[in-house]
Length: 94
Image: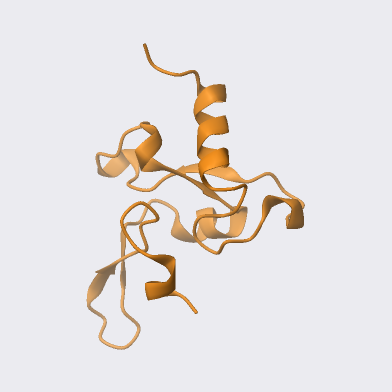
């Protein structure tokens, strides 16, 4: 039996400590409600499973959109975006 969306939202929010999993802003500092977003978008084969969902502030979610790769500004090579399930935040951001 799958969890309800309310329960999934609660689990994702608790796992993230109520922080955006991309920029680490706490939800209490943001005027808008954080989004539950797909790390790998459904359009790219991602699922609604909790391990493919992340808590994201509106700015990070809208900036990421449905992308999983973006051009590196130095080389123009397509590189993967940060994945909060497999990447370490400190390795990607300062």
